[in-house]
Image 1 (tube, rainbow, N blue to C red):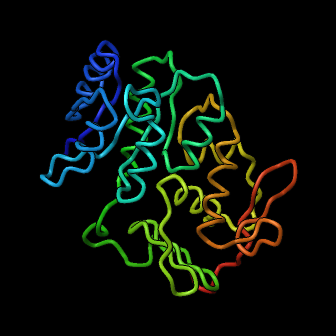
Image 2: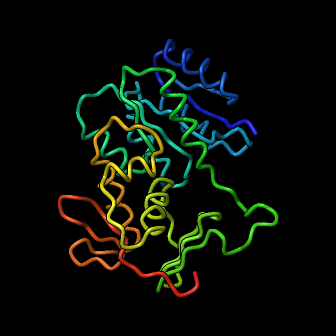
Image 3: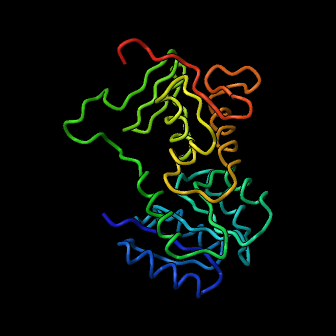
Length: 241
């Protein structure tokens, strides 16, 4: 099924090039050149809302980060930030706000298309495939259940909502409890391609996961920090999982 992608950028040339590459991949592509127009399209209720948004940070009306903050109040649409700014703070703020990925200008349109394919592969299924065993994709620990197929996380009887990458990051750790992952290993495991950005994006997402879980970094129960190396999942699997 074709996915809908919205390209938000005030430069027509960039929108045109990206549209050509994304349509060549079979996506249905629309465009917006302002933050206000982007919000209208993303929050549309007529069935035309996009599955993924390529969102430029610099827009003529609303800052792209403000657009993202507004979206995250009501929408979990996939968002890839596009920025020409040199400051790393913008990228880290965007990831902390709920962006799924980021790309820095100047970029290769082929790279953008590859990033979009990677994120869209994470599209959430509303139900398990027919015939799939219910427990095939479920990880169970004391007080925590992680269902990969349904993209559901339950902690102490309460469902916890994570962003796409936060869920994938937690699942990567939980699938190998006790194993220490370096940041580079987590980038490869979760992002799924050669990542040329700052490895601190892992730290940003770990903080988001901990915040959602109520896990204290100073005295963790679920995700431990291995100083100078990376992270590990602390809970032990329930018997028979």
